Length: 411
Ligand SMILES: Cc1cc2nc3c(=O)[nH]c(=O)nc-3n(C[C@H](O)[C@H](O)[C@H](O)COP(=O)(O)OP(=O)(O)OC[C@H]3O[C@@H](n4cnc5c(N)ncnc54)[C@H](O)[C@@H]3O)c2cc1C
Image (tube, rainbow, N blue to C red; front, side, top):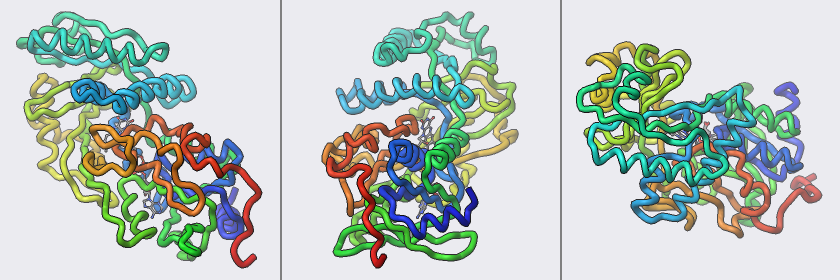
């Protein structure tokens, strides 16, 4: 379908759902909605996956560190998130084998007490996955570890727990979600920015969309408007209510890209704790080695760039495991950074985790005329982007579904 036709549809139809933001969350919501027969529009102000969704560590995982946190804080919500994500991992590996693969990860261990700790933790990870489990976690001794990851620093190495997680092409996954939403009858448009919200009697009726290519502005009407703008969600909230206090506080995670010499093609490393307490991954990726990530407070900006001082922790992690000589980041080929909101202390919805991910919308969540915020789980993983609970009706106001479309105002 041509862009002009999509713009015509945007301007002339009334949608069940208008999704703002074409990252993994927005594209996932749009796909779920369109494939369930809802009249769906999705607008993205730049390109699909322009934001955080192309800047991730590219793991399809439940999150070993989230599991650790859940156990330490006895947080059942967090635990459920890990379990759900592990099940979604299996789904994604099955339905998108061209974009994903299982990947072996080693957790190199240099202290004896770490061996039972990480072995037990990764066995629990397997247990939580249940039938969606990949290959079972196993302890391998120092020699076996070095055979599988020759660059590891052998000095004091006790061994490693090897486990499998998934790896995926985050940007292509995002673009495929958007294209499939289009194929399912949705109106899906990039370079289309929401600059304001349309209201009538205090009820939300749609949004003002600026076509960045033609410079034209149009009004798009919808029964439900979904704010899937990730780290920019506060901006849309404040279009809805200028007095709404900001809920997100971003931090940025950076990755550096090294030559392929530093990882075998089929195995990565999870370094559970660097000297400064970070979790760092060293992963084979597109013929190179992806090292990340840091987690520092940062302002929310459009195209975050890496500051030189942010690279230091990645370097430290490499040296810790002897994976690279000092100064290797000079070989870095690209350095994506991404905001990692929100503020754990201020969740939008009651169901939140210790890291601030918001799990599902409340059972009687916003319905027509109110702004929906599925993507305020932006601190989370893009896995549950099929968002079944959201558009499937369980998480939304019981009163809405694919009904007869209301007439456009004035028509
Ligand atoms: C460093 C880092 C590593 C990560 N690693 C992983 C990982 O390994 N595995 C994993 O599963 N998850 C990971 N995540 C989390 C994952 O990347 C995010 O949960 C996910 O990408 C969020 O997607 P989103 O659609 O909510 O936000 P985004 O991808 O940021 O999308 C929001 C979109 O909204 C658009 N937008 C904003 N304002 C407007 C407007 N006014 N009009 C129209 N469009 C607008 C933006 O341009 C943007 O494209 C990581 C996150 C970070 C930061």
